[in-house]
Length: 295
Image 1 (tube, helix red, strand yellow):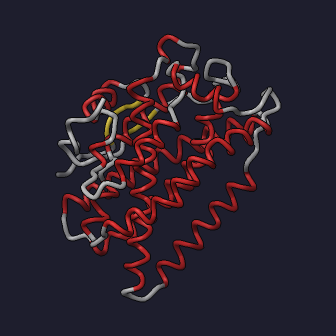
Image 2 (cartoon, rainbow, N blue to C red; image 1 turned 60 degrees about the vertical axis):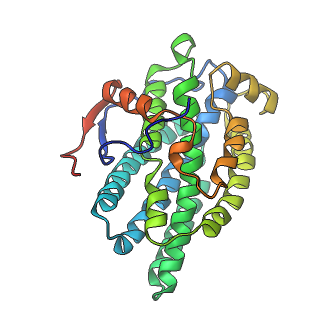
């Protein structure tokens, strides 16, 4: 389903959440290691990735003169902090099952901090150019998360499958907020002077990392999982995606063509913003906005 609404009618804002994440079994999605760990890769990548997204938009704030966009940035930052916190709880649960990535995550986080420190020490106009590339990278990553989120929200068959309900609520909430705020980094990038060439240049290496890295990391999670059997396979991934158990990396790769169109906007991605907002208005374990919304 393609969205007809390109931006939400109100600026994005963070929400209170109340997920019970202490009980999910190790293979919480159809008792299948590959399907489960396809999502668990997100648990590993999202916390530091979302800190980077927040670094980039926070660094862009001095260059933003439009108050609506500044409000959107603040809402985006709050949503990403909540996403990070919930997925870090999932990582802790994975560690309880013997799936330990602490060393790699610490290295990933250390690199992010050093990069952000170096950008903020740059004099102008070099700082702004570095910030533009950070925001371009965030916009490219948000393209992927919104693409994956659209398939999770629209195509899942979890109501008819054996899935832990709290994990299902967690990922449906996250998917819906990704669709809700998919325009923010893109709008910030263009508002502060970003152009087409830098936008697509940031996507090229990121697309390779995600499309190659996600299967490889899923395979590594399976290898470290004491309860997992077998190895990751494309055939199993495609079958699982067709059954509506996981998102489709193949379809997200196809969505890349949209990003390279000069007139692309995130609202053109598959995934209905109306459906996302409707889900968020009634979602279990999602308790409403934190504080007043400002237009």
